[in-house]
Image (tube, rainbow, N blue to C red; front, side, top):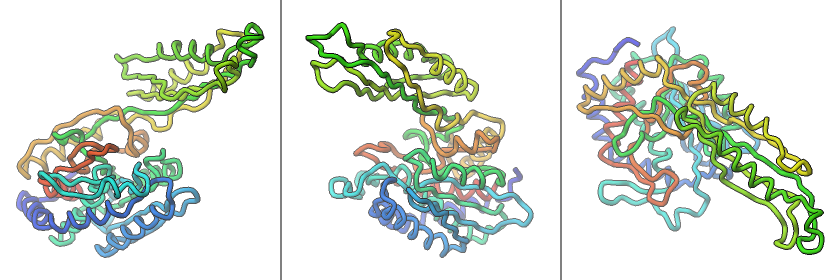
Length: 387
């Protein structure tokens, strides 16, 4: 990764992003006010069409990947040095917020922050990528690698329709920069993420009248309760493995011995090797009551993003850029997953948390720190130009 950005050029990039901050905030408000919940294809496609026009105005070559159940995924290609593998910017424009949320949580600016549903996760990151490319174009900093930007529409819903596209594009790239929010108010970059998934344990018992024929019943709820106690033993905090029963359903009436019960179990692993071990443990479960039958399904949805040598090199490059811009940049690991998990698992250098600095993702106080917006946009632009 050769440094192709002079120390003089980085302050110029920062000056551009500082001058562009009012325009960036206006663009961000526009995105926040286009509500784009994952499960509303029409709404998400409206957002994608707008973003396509914005990136196209900067010289991007636009491709929409059509999907049946989710919004169309948006890919943008920007030219760069001939013969070089591109750098990939990876993000998403769907949110967890349902249509109508703006009525109670409108976009607003107060006390140095901008608030709104989806602003941190991750519409600010999209605006940052837009103005990072704008800065490089404005300053004629075309010596960078080609840039591929992929913005998916289903990340918050598991990335089932976008994963193959993400992996296919990433395989041809030098590195992946993920536009998810930075870690915490300190703004650390993310060099490791846990893998995550869901297991479902369904118990089939035998119903009976709880008063008249109690002894003839075999309670799925009782069996499931024993299974839940069993699977909590799979947690191993020393290895970064957590097993968390999150949703339990069962029974029909209080006077009926339950014939059916189900638990949804969240799993997190820090190392890929542990996902196979956890799978064996779940599949080896056996009924305590021989008259009850277990059905175990599910598994890992996102592989872990492990801290690799390639990711560390990207981090060190980002830290050098940050120093030139006048600030220090830390690193962190997190239990949450992103689409960067997929690219990292392919062995491609991946650095996450290059989006906005703020707090409250998925919460009513979701917000970004405005003073950080131009600084972090300059960091992103400088990193693109330096890789």
